[in-house]
Amino acid sequence: MPSYRYQCLDCAKTHIGAEIVSGMICNCSPPKRINGSKMRDVVLVREPLSDALLTEVSSSEAPDLRATLCLRWGINNKSHKSHGSNFSSSQTVVNLIHDITYPVQGGLINTVRAAIIDDYRYDYITGEMVN
Image (cartoon, rainbow, N blue to C red; front, side):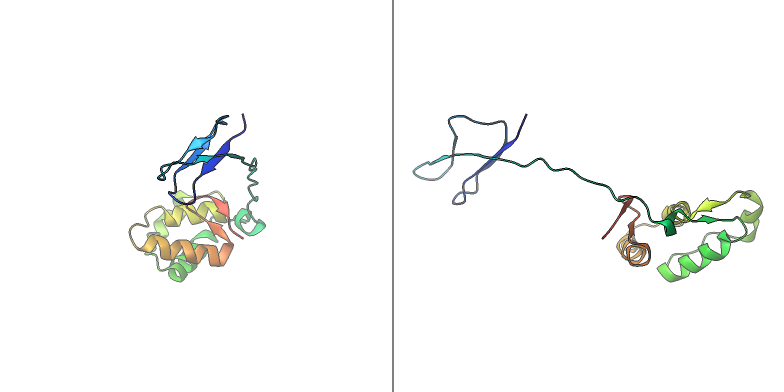
């Protein structure tokens, strides 16, 4: 079912929904009858993750990359050498980003988010590529 938008520019009353055949009555004095306009269908296309984000990082390379990214983004690196023996499989850069950013809280979130967008064009909060 198509949606229609009714809006009075004077009183700002707005309705979005099914067609109202008789039109919407606004809150102005005197009230006016507002005809709706059919809204376009919007199709969202999600851009696939970049090759840089899907790059596999070996378990021996991951600690160095993690340390570099933590330093660059101002995050306390919680990793230590004993973790190396716990993780023996490779992971993608995007998985590493999510591991690094999981504990980020407060005002640091916006700083880290902007830095990751700058570096990878990736918004780790929405999980989407950014143009």
